[in-house]
Length: 123
Image (cartoon, rainbow, N blue to C red; front, side, top):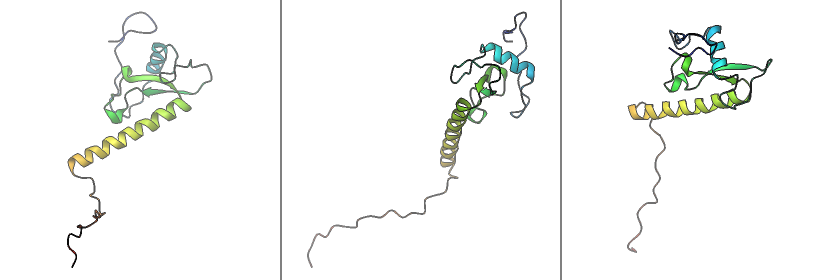
């Protein structure tokens, strides 16, 4: 149960059936009101006519859940693009580390060059 930002009784938290399930409009409205109409990334007030999205605070690819308490409003232009770029970078790194740990990362084909042995005698 979460507090209803509209006042009144508590409401059941929305949880998506799958990671791809979009949040219904009633949930988007509650998320917007819970964050007082502010972008969770930049802190700027979202005005009428501004383009904004509902964003997963902890991305699904890094273990976040598709549920109402993991959603927050974010301005579509700079803040959302920057956050997505950072998340993609982190997810790719986590994938590389996991593949190296499991041994499925391709081995390097480059040979390590050595300088050879030092000459100790003159012949």
